[in-house]
Image (cartoon, rainbow, N blue to C red; front, side, top):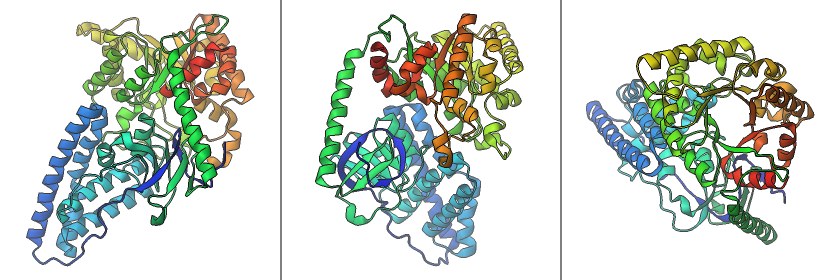
Length: 540
């Protein structure tokens, strides 16, 4: 593979070649003037706020129809943020005390809120910056009498923008988008998440590109974060061939649908997929995964301004389980902490959050939230094959406490005559060297293990997986990590339980053979990797 000239942040895999299309905010200059009729200006702002609320309600309904309730939830959040009393007060104070016109008052309030969020260095709060921009731009456009709809895309292109807002993403015709490239944003930005869901290559955090490049050709590689503007004819031809090769490869892999994931020696591997939202189930089914090996439920909690209720969670879990039609769905309980946060949980600021209050430790401390989630999962087990998995287990006493809580909840459900599957399997994630070393003891307490190699490698090698300065030391296929995986598999099989692997290494075709030889019974991968991994397994 050729090296391209520039590098951003890899956000969604795939190569794309096409014309660059600048998607600009239609607000070129926000008016600024002194107002003297304060009450009239406040009324003008309040009327714009009502219009914005109606528009967000319409967007919510459109998103529910096109993408489902979970994707639409962002517009409910926007409506709540729009009604935030602090935001309201700041805008009105700008009008009253500084005699700002409403457009400038909104813009200044937005800048103030964004500055506060960006200063936290909290990835979740910083991701909300785009939401504040979206709401503020909507209000300003309404006040200026401009349209709030996105530009139309008439031909296939690669979209470049600062960072798309959720409402802009919803309105774009994604069938004509070859790739996204953004000036700002992160791997957790709305643009990146939606790009991955739709299988669209994406590179973020590339900085400002000069206007002269609008309409010029660009090459991007979403798997490396590399891109090249105005590339040579040789580079264009090279990457166009790669794109054609990728299309042909995807077509050829379709023949593997419906076939078992079995080695030439007859060993069956359960080939599952990882998901983060219930909308991902569509991709799981399309790629013929045999089950869901990791349902990351933290996103249900992170995209809300308060903890989701038991009923909200039950509806989501039930929907996923029903759609999987009897195939196993492994639901991981709340895994908040370290690089993932939810403001309403009010987690303490820790010097080393990766070693702090996270995963099962947090759940055992906040048992009201934990029990609500467990009740919702158990209720969903009445509609299909559900397994429950607990993250960040390092000591046997933790799983014993968890099992006692589950017993209490099952008794409660029986008394209330609420149906659930009493045989629901429980398992733990092996993410620390401690859990791997004690896997012989854990194997007598649970029905299965799932090895989370992302964290297992981090803790084993003492290399922060989010720190680029030590990236050369962080390797999920490091010999020490592979030895721990083998130990875990051996201890599990001695006790008669099965072992899965749900870390990023499971999607790495170059390591598939090693994982199978270590004794892995199940691999849980990103949905687009199901068929490539199945092909690899069948050739072993």
